[in-house]
Length: 154
Length: 424
Image (cartoon, rainbow over all chains, first blue to last red; front, side):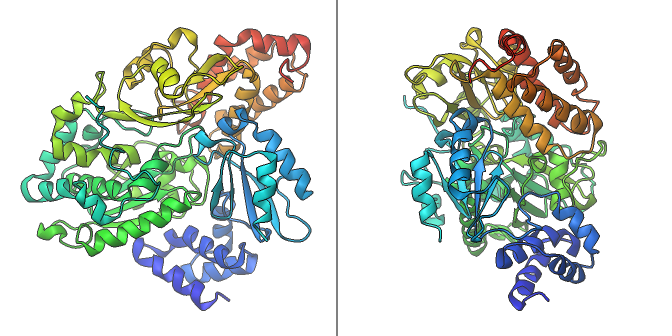
């Protein structure tokens, strides 16, 4: 079941588009905002609201890297691995984050606190290397800086 | 005379966005008022045409001309989309405009909407630009309240609805027709053309898609005129341009400068030259999908025409600098890894060829390069040309690879001959 606030937020998108199907990406992101990810059950509920099959919805969901079809940690770390960050040592930062958290990119920590994901260029190349955690961009990364930043996310 | 910086000159120095009051005090929405009260849509288009504004998303297509492609008797609703899906690696210019002055984009869109007789407009924003999203939402609410958007704008009879769409990732969404599919709630595969979007675009209706920086120029052109805009530039391509530099330069950053400054000026004066201890080897002038330029090109003017003559493209105008402590093969591997990962899988030369090339480059970096690899790489790039694929992703991927094979061939050969990456 969609929660009432999820439903309200999805329905608020309806007037922005000429048909309900166009709302599906927004709808999945809204559910994800509330639950962290989009489960099979959530997919069916969204499908019912929008008049789409869950297979159709999954086809869309799996195209987009910011829609999660598996549970993630409470905080998602997006480490940029594109060219400017790579030149500035993104590999080292990724290895450091990976070792500190004890996970490989793509995995969640055992305590459910973090998921570590690689991401394409975050558009902050003058401050490379860069990562985002949840909604915040962190730049000019060093291993020490990564350690300090991670402490802020409980 | 100080350089005029119409796009960024009024921005706050503390990094906050201009709110509506501050934007109006700086002359904001004067152009919209002027256009709606004293100009026909055709006159707005003509002014932009005569300004010679070229699209700032990378392709440099003349904006005014693009606006004339919607047939006069085309059905409604007509759509306008601001492509704010800034995902070209090494590019960070639209973020500045979106975060620093969202009203400038909104006014530009209202003007473009009026010129193209548009009913509904979207800002298609990449999902990671959360700060920009919050600021655009606030600006949209302010603009609606002030009557700059919505029904009967400034009592002119012209109406425009403008919505923000926050995307969910993937480089393909920045491709014009991929973007339209994404807005329709589909996978962002490219569409076959024709029909082109001005005839049949979003939801099958006439659609104009422009880049953020392009649209941000429009209010200034309407206010100050086409001749003023042409004179801002040092070259045939008019206006100012947001230029950037990243990599191991002393002062990476972004600067609004007259169109046509030289690469050397950008690199040495604005970016402060190379960091101590590293030497310049080459650069991608405007994002991942542009050909490398090297030492001999430093005096080339950064505009669409001149960079093309030098064998590359200005692209987004944000340069990525390669230094002598960084492996050129590793850099190309990183780029091709990106393109292979972001390929939507629609066309064979792209999904198959990119994966193959990425594996060859990885093998080379890991000391497993084979004689004949360079021929294989060059062979693949020949399939990644317009006409073999639906969109520009694979043609874009060919550019850094083919030029690296030309300028850094000896480095590729060393990887194969020494069976290792000399930089590791």
